[in-house]
Length: 505
Image (cartoon, rainbow, N blue to C red; front, top):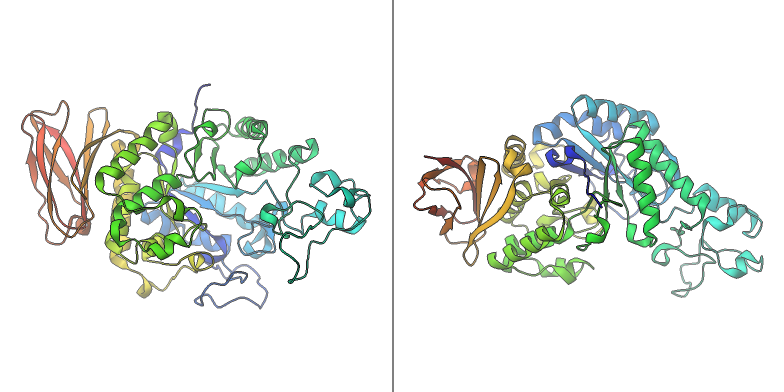
Protein backbone atom coordinates (compact mmCIF):
# COMPACT_ATOMS: atom_id res chain seq x y z
CA UNK A 1 0.00 0.00 0.00
CA UNK A 2 1.22 3.50 -0.85
CA UNK A 3 2.28 5.66 2.09
CA UNK A 4 0.95 9.21 1.79
CA UNK A 5 1.69 11.54 4.70
CA UNK A 6 0.82 15.26 5.04
CA UNK A 7 3.51 17.43 3.49
CA UNK A 8 3.05 20.24 6.02
CA UNK A 9 4.14 18.05 8.93
CA UNK A 10 7.68 17.83 7.52
CA UNK A 11 7.99 21.56 8.19
CA UNK A 12 6.15 21.51 11.52
CA UNK A 13 7.49 22.34 14.97
CA UNK A 14 4.87 21.21 17.49
CA UNK A 15 4.15 22.46 20.99
CA UNK A 16 2.05 20.26 23.26
CA UNK A 17 -0.32 22.11 25.58
CA UNK A 18 -2.30 20.83 28.56
CA UNK A 19 -5.01 23.52 28.28
CA UNK A 20 -5.91 23.82 31.98
CA UNK A 21 -2.28 24.63 32.82
CA UNK A 22 -1.02 26.89 30.02
CA UNK A 23 -2.68 30.30 30.25
CA UNK A 24 -5.90 31.84 31.66
CA UNK A 25 -7.34 34.59 29.49
CA UNK A 26 -9.55 36.46 31.94
CA UNK A 27 -12.28 36.31 29.27
CA UNK A 28 -13.86 32.99 30.25
CA UNK A 29 -16.33 32.90 33.14
CA UNK A 30 -14.96 30.55 35.79
CA UNK A 31 -16.42 29.16 39.01
CA UNK A 32 -14.80 30.41 42.17
CA UNK A 33 -13.18 27.16 43.26
CA UNK A 34 -9.97 27.08 41.27
CA UNK A 35 -6.54 26.25 42.61
CA UNK A 36 -4.09 29.18 42.72
CA UNK A 37 -2.21 29.31 39.43
CA UNK A 38 1.22 29.13 41.05
CA UNK A 39 0.38 26.36 43.54
CA UNK A 40 1.64 22.81 43.14
CA UNK A 41 -0.53 20.79 40.75
CA UNK A 42 -2.87 18.19 42.22
CA UNK A 43 -4.44 15.13 40.67
CA UNK A 44 -7.96 16.51 40.44
CA UNK A 45 -7.65 20.28 40.81
CA UNK A 46 -8.36 22.86 38.11
CA UNK A 47 -6.13 25.89 37.51
CA UNK A 48 -8.27 27.72 34.97
CA UNK A 49 -6.29 27.81 31.75
CA UNK A 50 -8.43 28.17 28.64
CA UNK A 51 -8.29 28.24 24.85
CA UNK A 52 -8.42 32.03 24.66
CA UNK A 53 -5.34 32.12 26.86
CA UNK A 54 -3.59 29.96 24.29
CA UNK A 55 -4.75 32.27 21.50
CA UNK A 56 -3.40 35.30 23.34
CA UNK A 57 0.04 33.68 23.61
CA UNK A 58 0.42 32.63 19.99
CA UNK A 59 3.01 35.42 19.49
CA UNK A 60 5.12 33.87 22.27
CA UNK A 61 4.91 30.46 20.61
CA UNK A 62 5.64 31.78 17.15
CA UNK A 63 8.68 33.65 18.45
CA UNK A 64 9.91 30.37 19.97
CA UNK A 65 9.80 28.77 16.52
CA UNK A 66 6.54 26.85 16.92
CA UNK A 67 4.11 26.54 14.01
CA UNK A 68 1.81 23.72 15.18
CA UNK A 69 -0.08 22.99 18.39
CA UNK A 70 -1.09 19.66 19.86
CA UNK A 71 -3.74 20.11 22.56
CA UNK A 72 -4.67 17.41 25.04
CA UNK A 73 -8.48 16.87 25.16
CA UNK A 74 -10.74 19.91 25.20
CA UNK A 75 -14.26 18.45 25.21
CA UNK A 76 -16.70 18.57 28.16
CA UNK A 77 -15.41 16.48 31.02
CA UNK A 78 -15.19 16.36 34.80
CA UNK A 79 -11.41 15.88 34.84
CA UNK A 80 -8.73 18.55 34.42
CA UNK A 81 -7.06 16.46 31.69
CA UNK A 82 -10.43 15.81 30.00
CA UNK A 83 -9.77 12.20 29.02
CA UNK A 84 -13.13 11.46 30.72
CA UNK A 85 -15.28 12.74 27.83
CA UNK A 86 -18.89 13.76 28.51
CA UNK A 87 -19.79 15.32 25.16
CA UNK A 88 -17.66 14.88 22.03
CA UNK A 89 -19.51 17.63 20.18
CA UNK A 90 -18.96 20.39 22.73
CA UNK A 91 -15.81 22.16 23.93
CA UNK A 92 -15.69 22.41 27.72
CA UNK A 93 -17.14 25.74 28.94
CA UNK A 94 -14.24 26.01 31.40
CA UNK A 95 -12.00 26.29 28.33
CA UNK A 96 -14.27 28.85 26.67
CA UNK A 97 -16.62 26.59 24.72
CA UNK A 98 -16.88 26.21 20.97
CA UNK A 99 -16.49 29.96 20.44
CA UNK A 100 -13.06 29.91 22.06
CA UNK A 101 -11.91 27.08 19.82
CA UNK A 102 -13.21 29.02 16.81
CA UNK A 103 -11.15 32.05 17.85
CA UNK A 104 -8.05 29.97 18.54
CA UNK A 105 -8.25 28.24 15.16
CA UNK A 106 -8.83 31.50 13.31
CA UNK A 107 -5.95 33.28 15.01
CA UNK A 108 -3.64 30.29 14.62
CA UNK A 109 -4.44 29.87 10.94
CA UNK A 110 -3.89 33.58 10.35
CA UNK A 111 -0.35 32.95 11.57
CA UNK A 112 -0.05 29.82 9.40
CA UNK A 113 -0.05 27.65 12.50
CA UNK A 114 -1.79 24.27 12.66
CA UNK A 115 -3.87 22.83 15.52
CA UNK A 116 -4.20 19.11 16.29
CA UNK A 117 -6.69 17.82 18.88
CA UNK A 118 -6.60 14.75 21.09
CA UNK A 119 -9.23 12.11 20.32
CA UNK A 120 -10.25 9.66 23.06
CA UNK A 121 -12.36 7.04 21.30
CA UNK A 122 -11.68 3.87 23.28
CA UNK A 123 -13.52 4.97 26.42
CA UNK A 124 -15.65 7.81 27.74
CA UNK A 125 -16.42 9.41 31.08
CA UNK A 126 -19.26 8.29 33.33
CA UNK A 127 -21.06 11.50 32.38
CA UNK A 128 -21.25 10.57 28.67
CA UNK A 129 -24.96 10.79 27.89
CA UNK A 130 -25.48 7.22 26.52
CA UNK A 131 -23.79 5.79 29.60
CA UNK A 132 -25.91 8.01 31.82
CA UNK A 133 -28.99 6.81 29.94
CA UNK A 134 -28.09 3.23 30.86
CA UNK A 135 -27.66 4.21 34.50
CA UNK A 136 -31.07 5.88 34.59
CA UNK A 137 -32.92 2.98 32.95
CA UNK A 138 -31.16 0.18 34.79
CA UNK A 139 -29.28 -1.06 31.75
CA UNK A 140 -31.52 -3.75 30.28
CA UNK A 141 -34.09 -1.27 28.92
CA UNK A 142 -31.75 1.34 27.45
CA UNK A 143 -31.38 1.47 23.65
CA UNK A 144 -27.73 2.35 24.31
CA UNK A 145 -26.98 -0.83 26.26
CA UNK A 146 -24.91 -2.20 23.37
CA UNK A 147 -22.70 0.91 23.24
CA UNK A 148 -20.68 -0.46 26.14
CA UNK A 149 -19.54 -3.85 27.40
CA UNK A 150 -22.14 -4.62 30.07
CA UNK A 151 -22.07 -7.75 32.18
CA UNK A 152 -24.67 -10.39 31.36
CA UNK A 153 -26.49 -10.00 34.66
CA UNK A 154 -26.85 -6.25 34.02
CA UNK A 155 -28.25 -6.93 30.55
CA UNK A 156 -30.64 -9.45 32.06
CA UNK A 157 -31.86 -6.90 34.58
CA UNK A 158 -30.59 -8.91 37.56
CA UNK A 159 -28.31 -6.19 38.91
CA UNK A 160 -27.40 -2.56 38.37
CA UNK A 161 -24.02 -1.15 37.52
CA UNK A 162 -21.85 0.36 40.27
CA UNK A 163 -19.98 3.23 38.58
CA UNK A 164 -19.23 4.79 41.98
CA UNK A 165 -17.98 1.85 44.05
CA UNK A 166 -17.09 2.48 47.70
CA UNK A 167 -13.48 3.31 48.39
CA UNK A 168 -13.05 0.06 50.29
CA UNK A 169 -14.42 -2.09 47.46
CA UNK A 170 -12.18 -5.12 46.74
CA UNK A 171 -9.70 -4.67 43.90
CA UNK A 172 -11.14 -6.17 40.74
CA UNK A 173 -14.72 -6.14 42.00
CA UNK A 174 -17.20 -6.17 39.13
CA UNK A 175 -18.61 -2.80 38.12
CA UNK A 176 -21.19 -4.38 35.86
CA UNK A 177 -19.32 -3.06 32.81
CA UNK A 178 -15.84 -3.06 31.29
CA UNK A 179 -13.71 -0.03 32.08
CA UNK A 180 -10.31 1.01 30.80
CA UNK A 181 -7.69 -0.39 33.19
CA UNK A 182 -10.61 -1.21 35.48
CA UNK A 183 -11.10 2.47 36.31
CA UNK A 184 -14.80 3.07 37.11
CA UNK A 185 -14.70 6.58 35.65
CA UNK A 186 -13.72 5.28 32.19
CA UNK A 187 -16.33 2.91 30.72
CA UNK A 188 -15.01 1.24 27.59
CA UNK A 189 -16.94 1.79 24.38
CA UNK A 190 -18.08 -1.15 22.28
CA UNK A 191 -16.39 0.02 19.10
CA UNK A 192 -17.55 -3.11 17.26
CA UNK A 193 -21.13 -1.81 17.39
CA UNK A 194 -22.09 -0.07 14.11
CA UNK A 195 -23.86 2.83 15.84
CA UNK A 196 -20.85 3.50 18.07
CA UNK A 197 -18.50 3.44 15.10
CA UNK A 198 -20.67 5.82 13.14
CA UNK A 199 -20.94 8.15 16.12
CA UNK A 200 -17.15 8.30 16.59
CA UNK A 201 -16.49 8.73 12.87
CA UNK A 202 -18.95 11.62 12.80
CA UNK A 203 -17.12 13.23 15.74
CA UNK A 204 -13.82 13.08 13.86
CA UNK A 205 -15.39 14.50 10.71
CA UNK A 206 -17.26 17.26 12.53
CA UNK A 207 -14.17 18.81 14.11
CA UNK A 208 -12.12 18.50 10.92
CA UNK A 209 -14.86 20.46 9.15
CA UNK A 210 -14.80 22.91 12.05
CA UNK A 211 -11.19 23.62 11.14
CA UNK A 212 -8.79 21.47 13.15
CA UNK A 213 -5.79 20.08 11.28
CA UNK A 214 -5.60 16.56 12.64
CA UNK A 215 -6.06 14.10 15.45
CA UNK A 216 -3.74 12.59 18.04
CA UNK A 217 -5.42 9.31 18.94
CA UNK A 218 -5.33 8.17 22.54
CA UNK A 219 -4.53 4.48 23.30
CA UNK A 220 -5.49 3.30 19.79
CA UNK A 221 -4.12 -0.16 20.48
CA UNK A 222 -7.04 -0.74 22.86
CA UNK A 223 -9.31 -0.84 19.79
CA UNK A 224 -8.03 -4.10 18.38
CA UNK A 225 -9.90 -4.26 15.07
CA UNK A 226 -7.70 -2.70 12.34
CA UNK A 227 -10.84 -2.00 10.30
CA UNK A 228 -11.91 0.64 12.82
CA UNK A 229 -8.80 2.74 12.21
CA UNK A 230 -8.77 2.01 8.48
CA UNK A 231 -12.29 3.40 8.25
CA UNK A 232 -11.32 6.28 10.53
CA UNK A 233 -8.49 7.23 8.17
CA UNK A 234 -10.67 7.06 5.07
CA UNK A 235 -13.38 9.19 6.64
CA UNK A 236 -10.94 11.80 7.97
CA UNK A 237 -8.96 12.07 4.74
CA UNK A 238 -12.19 12.43 2.75
CA UNK A 239 -12.94 15.57 4.77
CA UNK A 240 -9.39 16.96 4.87
CA UNK A 241 -6.80 15.24 2.70
CA UNK A 242 -3.86 16.64 4.66
CA UNK A 243 -5.23 15.90 8.13
CA UNK A 244 -2.46 14.60 10.40
CA UNK A 245 -3.34 11.35 12.18
CA UNK A 246 -0.86 10.38 14.89
CA UNK A 247 -1.29 7.50 17.31
CA UNK A 248 -0.20 7.08 20.90
CA UNK A 249 1.83 3.89 20.56
CA UNK A 250 4.84 3.63 22.89
CA UNK A 251 6.82 1.09 20.86
CA UNK A 252 8.10 0.69 17.33
CA UNK A 253 5.01 -0.47 15.44
CA UNK A 254 5.32 -0.38 11.63
CA UNK A 255 2.01 -2.21 11.19
CA UNK A 256 0.23 1.04 12.09
CA UNK A 257 2.06 3.08 9.46
CA UNK A 258 1.64 1.30 6.14
CA UNK A 259 -0.69 3.84 4.62
CA UNK A 260 -4.02 2.48 5.82
CA UNK A 261 -4.23 3.70 9.44
CA UNK A 262 -2.06 6.49 10.85
CA UNK A 263 0.41 8.93 9.34
CA UNK A 264 2.70 8.79 12.38
CA UNK A 265 3.15 7.69 15.96
CA UNK A 266 4.34 9.55 19.01
CA UNK A 267 8.03 8.66 18.85
CA UNK A 268 8.57 7.53 22.43
CA UNK A 269 11.30 5.04 21.41
CA UNK A 270 13.38 7.95 20.11
CA UNK A 271 12.65 9.99 23.25
CA UNK A 272 13.87 7.11 25.41
CA UNK A 273 17.04 6.77 23.35
CA UNK A 274 17.76 10.52 23.40
CA UNK A 275 17.30 10.73 27.16
CA UNK A 276 19.43 7.65 27.71
CA UNK A 277 22.20 9.11 25.56
CA UNK A 278 22.39 12.72 26.75
CA UNK A 279 21.71 11.66 30.34
CA UNK A 280 24.17 8.80 30.41
CA UNK A 281 25.20 7.90 33.93
CA UNK A 282 23.61 11.15 35.18
CA UNK A 283 20.06 9.89 34.64
CA UNK A 284 17.83 10.05 37.68
CA UNK A 285 17.05 6.35 37.80
CA UNK A 286 14.56 6.85 40.63
CA UNK A 287 12.46 8.94 38.23
CA UNK A 288 12.97 6.41 35.44
CA UNK A 289 12.03 3.42 37.60
CA UNK A 290 8.86 5.14 38.82
CA UNK A 291 7.43 5.25 35.27
CA UNK A 292 5.96 2.09 33.77
CA UNK A 293 7.33 2.54 30.23
CA UNK A 294 10.55 4.39 30.99
CA UNK A 295 11.54 1.78 33.58
CA UNK A 296 11.57 -0.84 30.83
CA UNK A 297 13.24 1.15 28.08
CA UNK A 298 15.51 3.95 29.32
CA UNK A 299 19.10 2.97 30.04
CA UNK A 300 22.36 4.93 29.80
CA UNK A 301 23.64 4.81 26.22
CA UNK A 302 27.07 5.62 24.85
CA UNK A 303 27.32 7.35 21.49
CA UNK A 304 27.64 4.12 19.51
CA UNK A 305 24.66 2.58 21.30
CA UNK A 306 22.57 5.66 20.59
CA UNK A 307 23.64 5.76 16.94
CA UNK A 308 22.74 2.10 16.51
CA UNK A 309 19.32 2.61 18.12
CA UNK A 310 18.75 5.75 16.05
CA UNK A 311 19.35 3.93 12.78
CA UNK A 312 17.24 0.94 13.89
CA UNK A 313 14.32 3.28 14.45
CA UNK A 314 15.04 5.17 11.23
CA UNK A 315 15.10 1.99 9.15
CA UNK A 316 11.88 0.61 10.66
CA UNK A 317 9.60 2.92 8.69
CA UNK A 318 9.08 4.26 5.19
CA UNK A 319 11.06 7.51 4.69
CA UNK A 320 7.80 9.44 4.25
CA UNK A 321 6.72 8.19 7.67
CA UNK A 322 10.04 8.93 9.37
CA UNK A 323 9.80 12.56 8.28
CA UNK A 324 6.46 13.06 10.07
CA UNK A 325 6.94 11.05 13.29
CA UNK A 326 6.12 13.15 16.35
CA UNK A 327 9.51 13.52 18.04
CA UNK A 328 8.98 14.36 21.68
CA UNK A 329 11.19 14.17 24.77
CA UNK A 330 8.40 14.73 27.28
CA UNK A 331 4.62 14.73 27.58
CA UNK A 332 1.76 14.76 30.08
CA UNK A 333 2.11 10.96 30.29
CA UNK A 334 5.78 10.92 31.29
CA UNK A 335 8.14 12.65 33.70
CA UNK A 336 9.44 15.94 32.38
CA UNK A 337 12.74 15.57 30.56
CA UNK A 338 14.54 17.84 33.01
CA UNK A 339 13.55 15.55 35.88
CA UNK A 340 14.66 12.42 34.02
CA UNK A 341 17.98 14.20 33.42
CA UNK A 342 18.37 14.96 37.15
CA UNK A 343 17.98 18.70 36.55
CA UNK A 344 20.94 18.91 34.15
CA UNK A 345 20.06 21.74 31.77
CA UNK A 346 23.15 21.06 29.66
CA UNK A 347 21.76 17.63 28.84
CA UNK A 348 18.31 19.08 28.11
CA UNK A 349 19.84 21.54 25.65
CA UNK A 350 21.49 18.70 23.75
CA UNK A 351 18.30 16.64 23.81
CA UNK A 352 16.49 19.56 22.20
CA UNK A 353 19.26 19.94 19.62
CA UNK A 354 18.73 16.30 18.66
CA UNK A 355 14.97 16.86 18.46
CA UNK A 356 15.46 19.76 16.10
CA UNK A 357 18.06 18.17 13.82
CA UNK A 358 16.85 14.58 13.40
CA UNK A 359 14.15 13.47 10.92
CA UNK A 360 10.60 13.92 12.18
CA UNK A 361 8.54 16.76 13.61
CA UNK A 362 9.88 18.00 16.96
CA UNK A 363 7.33 18.49 19.73
CA UNK A 364 8.12 20.64 22.79
CA UNK A 365 6.10 19.92 25.93
CA UNK A 366 4.82 23.22 27.29
CA UNK A 367 7.20 24.80 29.79
CA UNK A 368 10.17 22.56 29.06
CA UNK A 369 11.74 25.48 27.24
CA UNK A 370 11.81 27.62 30.40
CA UNK A 371 12.99 24.89 32.74
CA UNK A 372 9.85 23.30 34.20
CA UNK A 373 10.49 20.05 36.01
CA UNK A 374 8.17 17.42 37.45
CA UNK A 375 8.10 13.70 37.95
CA UNK A 376 4.96 11.69 37.22
CA UNK A 377 1.36 12.97 37.15
CA UNK A 378 0.40 15.39 38.61
CA UNK A 379 3.86 16.96 39.04
CA UNK A 380 4.53 16.91 35.29
CA UNK A 381 1.40 19.00 34.66
CA UNK A 382 2.26 22.20 36.47
CA UNK A 383 1.12 25.68 35.45
CA UNK A 384 3.18 27.63 32.95
CA UNK A 385 5.06 30.39 34.83
CA UNK A 386 4.25 33.59 32.97
CA UNK A 387 6.43 35.59 35.37
CA UNK A 388 9.58 35.76 33.25
CA UNK A 389 11.76 36.09 36.33
CA UNK A 390 10.97 32.39 36.91
CA UNK A 391 12.30 31.36 33.50
CA UNK A 392 15.65 29.91 32.63
CA UNK A 393 16.15 32.57 29.97
CA UNK A 394 19.31 30.96 28.65
CA UNK A 395 17.59 27.62 28.14
CA UNK A 396 14.71 29.28 26.34
CA UNK A 397 17.15 31.15 24.09
CA UNK A 398 18.87 27.88 23.18
CA UNK A 399 15.59 26.10 22.47
CA UNK A 400 14.53 29.03 20.31
CA UNK A 401 17.83 28.96 18.43
CA UNK A 402 17.63 25.29 17.46
CA UNK A 403 13.92 25.40 16.58
CA UNK A 404 14.43 28.42 14.36
CA UNK A 405 17.48 26.76 12.80
CA UNK A 406 15.28 23.84 11.81
CA UNK A 407 12.79 26.21 10.23
CA UNK A 408 15.55 27.92 8.23
CA UNK A 409 17.36 24.79 7.01
CA UNK A 410 15.55 22.52 4.51
CA UNK A 411 18.14 19.79 5.10
CA UNK A 412 16.99 19.44 8.72
CA UNK A 413 13.37 19.01 7.67
CA UNK A 414 13.74 16.97 4.50
CA UNK A 415 17.28 15.62 4.37
CA UNK A 416 18.59 12.07 4.47
CA UNK A 417 20.29 10.93 7.67
CA UNK A 418 23.65 9.22 8.02
CA UNK A 419 25.87 8.72 11.07
CA UNK A 420 29.41 9.96 10.44
CA UNK A 421 31.27 8.91 13.56
CA UNK A 422 31.29 8.37 17.31
CA UNK A 423 33.64 8.36 20.26
CA UNK A 424 32.66 6.99 23.65
CA UNK A 425 30.30 9.94 24.24
CA UNK A 426 30.43 12.18 21.15
CA UNK A 427 28.40 11.74 17.98
CA UNK A 428 28.29 13.31 14.53
CA UNK A 429 25.68 12.82 11.82
CA UNK A 430 24.82 14.37 8.47
CA UNK A 431 21.53 15.64 7.03
CA UNK A 432 21.66 15.89 3.24
CA UNK A 433 19.01 17.38 0.98
CA UNK A 434 20.07 17.84 -2.62
CA UNK A 435 23.15 20.06 -2.59
CA UNK A 436 22.53 21.16 0.99
CA UNK A 437 24.60 19.25 3.55
CA UNK A 438 24.70 19.87 7.30
CA UNK A 439 26.83 18.09 9.90
CA UNK A 440 25.65 17.96 13.53
CA UNK A 441 28.05 17.13 16.34
CA UNK A 442 27.25 16.60 20.05
CA UNK A 443 29.36 15.94 23.11
CA UNK A 444 27.38 15.18 26.31
CA UNK A 445 30.49 14.78 28.43
CA UNK A 446 32.78 16.72 30.78
CA UNK A 447 35.81 16.45 28.49
CA UNK A 448 36.39 18.20 25.18
CA UNK A 449 36.70 15.91 22.19
CA UNK A 450 37.95 15.94 18.61
CA UNK A 451 35.73 13.74 16.48
CA UNK A 452 37.01 12.35 13.18
CA UNK A 453 34.40 12.17 10.44
CA UNK A 454 34.33 11.32 6.76
CA UNK A 455 31.81 12.73 4.30
CA UNK A 456 31.12 10.95 1.04
CA UNK A 457 31.60 13.01 -2.13
CA UNK A 458 32.85 15.98 -0.17
CA UNK A 459 36.41 16.62 -1.31
CA UNK A 460 37.50 19.30 -1.82
CA UNK A 461 35.49 21.45 0.54
CA UNK A 462 35.13 22.79 4.06
CA UNK A 463 32.77 22.79 7.03
CA UNK A 464 31.57 26.21 8.20
CA UNK A 465 30.12 26.60 11.69
CA UNK A 466 26.51 27.76 11.98
CA UNK A 467 26.28 29.88 15.13
CA UNK A 468 24.25 28.46 18.01
CA UNK A 469 25.74 30.66 20.73
CA UNK A 470 25.72 28.96 24.15
CA UNK A 471 25.13 25.50 22.72
CA UNK A 472 28.63 25.62 21.26
CA UNK A 473 30.25 25.96 24.68
CA UNK A 474 31.27 29.13 26.47
CA UNK A 475 34.14 30.86 24.75
CA UNK A 476 34.15 28.47 21.81
CA UNK A 477 35.51 29.67 18.52
CA UNK A 478 33.60 29.05 15.32
CA UNK A 479 36.15 27.42 13.09
CA UNK A 480 36.05 26.65 9.42
CA UNK A 481 37.33 23.10 9.01
CA UNK A 482 39.01 21.99 5.81
CA UNK A 483 38.22 18.54 4.46
CA UNK A 484 41.08 16.35 3.28
CA UNK A 485 40.00 13.44 1.11
CA UNK A 486 36.54 13.95 2.60
CA UNK A 487 37.79 13.64 6.17
CA UNK A 488 37.89 16.21 8.96
CA UNK A 489 38.52 16.48 12.68
CA UNK A 490 35.71 18.33 14.48
CA UNK A 491 36.44 19.88 17.88
CA UNK A 492 33.47 19.87 20.28
CA UNK A 493 33.58 21.48 23.72
CA UNK A 494 32.20 19.70 26.80
CA UNK A 495 28.40 19.55 26.96
CA UNK A 496 27.97 21.32 23.68
CA UNK A 497 26.72 20.83 20.17
CA UNK A 498 27.67 22.25 16.81
CA UNK A 499 26.11 22.43 13.39
CA UNK A 500 28.29 22.83 10.30
CA UNK A 501 27.44 23.58 6.70
CA UNK A 502 29.43 21.86 3.97
CA UNK A 503 30.78 24.22 1.33
CA UNK A 504 32.40 22.77 -1.78
CA UNK A 505 35.68 24.35 -2.78
